[in-house]
Image 1 (tube, rainbow, N blue to C red):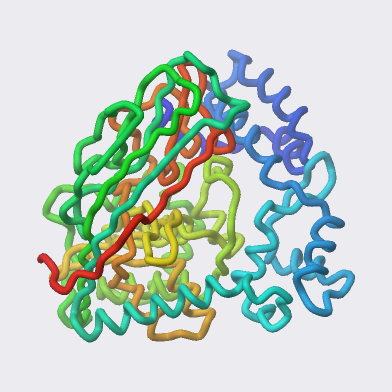
Image 2 (image 1 turned 30 degrees about the horizontal axis):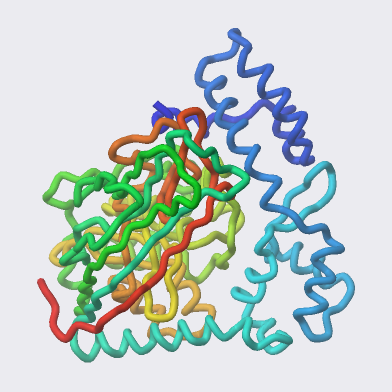
Length: 464
């Protein structure tokens, strides 16, 4: 099974393949990989690793379209007093995601919004104020809900959402069977009163309410103009409470959920993870304070950064610890891995940030600590608050969560129910939907998808 094979990503690649990829000679790397993967003298585990590598690197170059010249021109249009050579400093400081493609440095497709989003020292130089408007608006909304939850002890919302997916014309095969999976809320934890309102163009099959990655599955022969959609409502109920370390007893969840083990390739207690976990922990034994030390280290030391497809990284947590940067999912995985390494149960949550002004992909985490049970943590939001100098919001996202959450997954790297036949566009998570024909899986660039918030309502009471 494909998900069992992912653990082979821990196996090092042959040296010549690493050199070819580092130079950006992906065509030759793929040729060499194909030869080696068919060499029966090699260990089968390495051959599996090579086959996965071929799938991974086929996705990489398209994420890096910009040359240094392209990037410099873009920055001249966006930053006041942009100086020649300043881009080199951004790259040397690790603020820009880049690779070599055929020996030429290429920058990630989101390098510019990433710089403007994550580097507060550039804010006064931004020539287009609308670039920063969303960030300011979002921070104001989050600060408001923090005050609301502290005042009332809870926050609850009802959401009405529509998710759509359609295959792009150039990848449409009229008359061929297609399978489409769209995400749905997992009915656990903060989610209440889920209602399926509409779906199409065929009825589809809804996964169980507690599925690890919940979807609705559509299967039909593709017709002209097909738009696969699901419309539903649900509620989120979040609590605010005092987390007194003196009351913390730790423990493990009573439901038998395994949230202490490694899950290679990404949740793995490598030498770097073990060393950093011990550096963070010091002599601390209190489980709540241990988890807090992990949170503090991850929110204060790294910077937020957009990244390429998760499937193209052999180990996302080691990427975070070595490069000191990552996006929301990498923050969550790093928190989970470090907590588990220190004996604290921790698990994955992901889906959508579903707020009145925006709906977008997002990942976060939870850790277990009695007497409170599962407590939420949002490392990337905490990181943003820390770097913005907002200590109240930074403190809030350890142990508390805003109500703007649609959890569509409660486990990382879990198959769908029922499983797909081909490798997913995102084999670790599902927020945007997936599609496949009988002979191939489609990547995200092969289809269009959008999730719209149709309405929302603030609730004045909450359910325990």
